[in-house]
Length: 132
Image 1: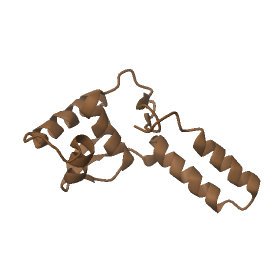
Image 2 (image 1 turned 45 degrees about the vertical axis):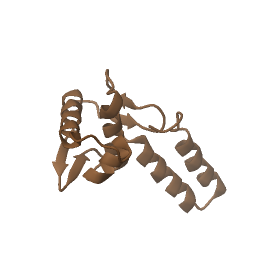
Image 3 (image 1 turned 30 degrees about the vertical axis):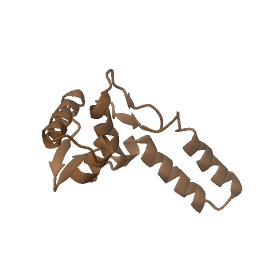
């Protein structure tokens, strides 16, 4: 049985278990997709995230290249063009930022102070530094 990949974006990018990490805009694309794991990130949002609105003329081709590199680096992880944007098809529970949000919400909804504190501690333990 193959290990389930876990992605860390609440600090420097991490992929577990995995050997290599993408760099530069390929890493930025991965981070942008992981922020919306399982959902399509529209092309204009990706352009803003990767080039801060100053995209090169070849930005579509660049994005295609970056997505292709991610597919080679993460075989078996679907990274697809879908309805005007790209999507990484991973369970949000594989991404620390989404786990953080779930734990923080559980803390908000907890009845006892001990239960709230437990959820908040678990959520805060996921942070490893400046996100992405």
